[in-house]
Amino acid sequence: MSLPKFRVALRGEALLTHPRFNKGTAFTASERKAFGLTGKLPYRINSLDEQCQRAYDQLQSQTTDIGKNSFLQSMKDQNWVLFYSLLTRHLRELIPIIYTPTEAEAIANYSHLFRRSEGLYLTFANRDTMEEDFLEATKGKSIDLFVSSDAEAILGIGDQGVGGIGISAAKSVIYSLIGGIDPSKAIAVTLDVGTNNESLLNDPLYVGWPHERIRGKEYDDFVDKFVQLVRKYFPHSLLHFEDYGVTNAQRLLQRYRNTHAVFNDDIQGTGAVTLSTLMAAIGVTKSKLCDQRIIIYGAGSAGLGIAKQLRDAMVSINNIPVEEANAHFWLIDKHGLIRESLPDVRDDLKEYVRKDAEWEEFQSNGDIKLLDVVKKVKPTVMIGTSTHAGGFTKEVVEAMAAGCDRPIIFPLSNPSRLVEVDPRDANDWTKGKALLATGSPFPPAKMPNGKDYIIAECNNALIYPGLGFGSMISQSRIMTDTMIIAGARRLASLSPALKDPDDALLPDFGDAPSVNFEVAVAVAEQAIEEGSAGVDWKKEEVREKAKERLWQPIYGEYVYDENGDK
Image 1 (cartoon, helix red, strand yellow):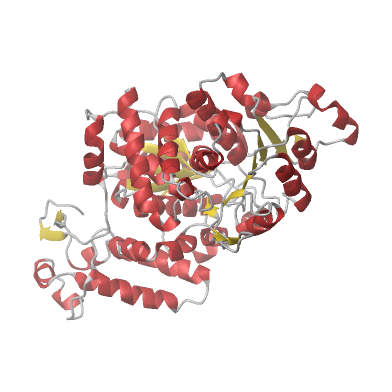
Image 2 (image 1 turned 90 degrees about the horizontal axis):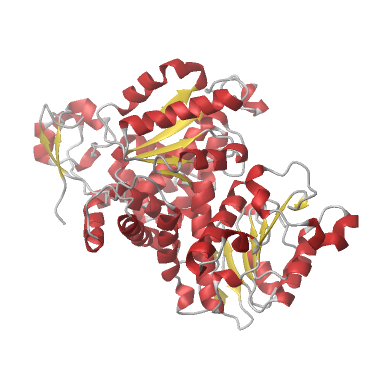
């Protein structure tokens, strides 16, 4: 592999403190001389492998996951190549440290762990200088990816105010680590519109804007100003919306999706990876997507996003009308089945509302519960996004298993303590018949024949980095539903269960980088085929073009140039 070459304008301390270019003890003798580093580094020159071993040994001295998270954040601030190279070598072990579930704890304690800024902070109180602040943060950069959050609905822990920059930064890391996106072309953004978290408002160390959340027109205008800056200065970039509240997530996605390449991971990413997993499962059951009767337990952003993604795939793949596809879904929230007589049903749920006449026998009992729906509908698929721990009870699971041969059960809530059912219990209660996937990693279940059944991890990180990379390399003007479906179908085609029905429904998470590359190729090919791409490529060229754009954590060769990068 030929090393990348860089013309660098930094010298001495400025170079050693620049995480993009710093090599630490890996600077060669000639580089040390050329960049004024000879007296600033110890004599021994280390390889990247040696640096990774030292860093891993230091990491192991941390006794808590949050301590490991802080150690890795500090490393990222010092040396990008070493940080990403270490993560690549220990992917399965360290993803839970730098992403879910440990990152949630880091975000909840953001103001108390704060050491240095890590992105672009756009605060409502400073809205008059937003363009100036935006341009200062992006000056001299070629940004392909903006990952933004208003932090209202973070990782199952709710409103975290300015701490939401942590999830934006973590998502950016995953894009580079698994998706191959150059970290110098990505930026994490927090839209600090206040917080309704009383513990933050009352915390004297809180570093965000200590004000209750802005709502309504002021909120919309603030978000719109940010989006228009992205469109104006970086028209070919991807804008990723992350952990926006349920009242805003779907609305903002619909507002901007036809004018810029925008992506909401909670809605589209969760929906896409769930679609992939379901397509793998129906590959095992030898059935069609439009044959499924689907219960979604939890009607927030994730649940609704899954419903829409599965519905749109039914329409596209099985060529049926939207109304017919909608009839395959039963959505349940804390008030029970979403139906006509429920008060204050959100506008974005109304196309899934069930008619009261279908449920007359249950009306006198108040809310129509999950068990009622399972017994009446006899679902083939049950998906949990409720964060209601234990919501899929033994009675519910056994009732489902009585109604179909291979129940497809996806308890997806995060973190694992909030999962609707332990997949090992679901496996036992269905006598090994269930096809299972979860949102967090779980140990294998035991089949009746004593064989281990690997629980697929229905993790967005198996697909969203590839969706993003495919959109970016094709310079797609918008992220279309058909691009997402193309990526989901490519992921489903890689399912181990298609070769062995008792194997996992999704590829091993350790293979996430190669899996996401395949997703990216499929997405870019679809963008070119449908005419939404901004590049003049043939479909046959996409794979090689994608390889050329793939960023890898290796040290390049540096030449000093006062007009070079800095």
